[in-house]
Length: 154
Image (cartoon, rainbow, N blue to C red; front, side, top):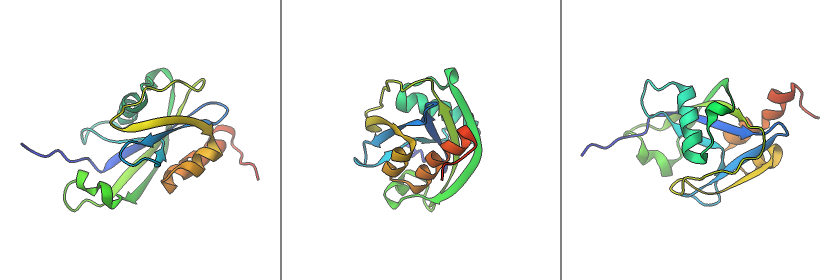
């Protein structure tokens, strides 16, 4: 039996409404850790937009092909938390994450994957950013105001 390791290239999908209400999911493997939809490529040649659509469907049940999914043309590289490094090939310690936004018409009911998440909540984007365990996820959420309106309140 061969071990299948995660590919260290992933997506972060911030799901939000026009009013900047933002969806957060609580991780099943670490209760209290709230985040946006995230996930790695299944295959090295999988297009990032397909990774984003697949992860949204798997984690929330939302059909991203029926919503406004935008590639934010932004990526970051971060150190993989030690607790999750065993999921990657030996020696892999860094991941490249690509940011997407998924604008939905309203706060949708979400169908969680119980293996991955315990609960979900819709929050004002500022509150959602405060609740995120990941600083880069919080940063992505805080960009919503500028991305949607072109201005940031002072």
